[in-house]
Image (tube, rainbow, N blue to C red; front, side, top):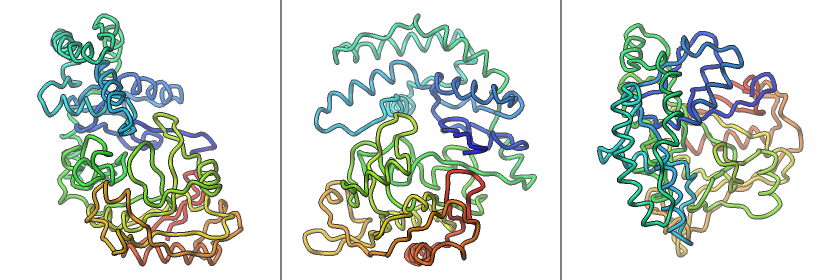
Length: 380
């Protein structure tokens, strides 16, 4: 939130709102043409010159119409075992990428090649869709949309790898922004309730071309409570009035889907696992103001399975769904903290909660966010 205006980012990096930086949509990103053009409309109406500010890698893969259709078809076929996918075609796009069937921005910039590949892949995918009882995709329906996208972004497509490595050589500051929680990582997350890519720190090199050795700091952003969209285990999930209050006050609804998020107490073993996995050395705690007014706040500090303590790293999703969380309780605070600018001015109970989280994680808490506004961050 900037100047009381909310910006829900999906593809274009949040740095676009700053005056100086060049922002990059790097190689590992998959791009939904409709979403990209919607976001471009928003920022161009604000007077931002995207041709000068935004660069898109030609290696980015495109989310095609049949990817969305396949996503929906597979999810519906799972019946009661639905994963809770966003149905935006992300998984099928990555599946095509690794099976050599993807279509990239590079092809879009070469129109005859794009049309040839689009027609070929649509023919194959339609056979699968028909088997699911779904109406086949018609290439002609979408060609004009892709043609518009191609001409609109052509001035912005460039060698993002070269730009990033030039900035590294010149010792410029680079901020790499991830979009998913660590527990959605395809390898280390709670499979199959994960995303299609590697979202941990090690995925930075894969997704951007920036070597891990060049990364000086890794920041972890964690809410003061836990939230999740869709299916999968959530050991600390709340179902009472406290859950309703947190969901409404924190506006816990999916940015992409608008679906209500499931909420629960903060799961510190999961957060610590994420910190270890991604070499996180700085923590930013957000939305702690949402906990104001609660008489008691809890934090999960461990788990039991069949009466025995178990480490988070030992758990697959089947075990997690059966875990009993071990909680530590904290007295809450009644004060509205949304306008506070100093850590020392936070309620004592709030300070104790933050310090406990820091001690448990063994990682320094450097930022505490007390309101959605960008300036409402306490730097420690």
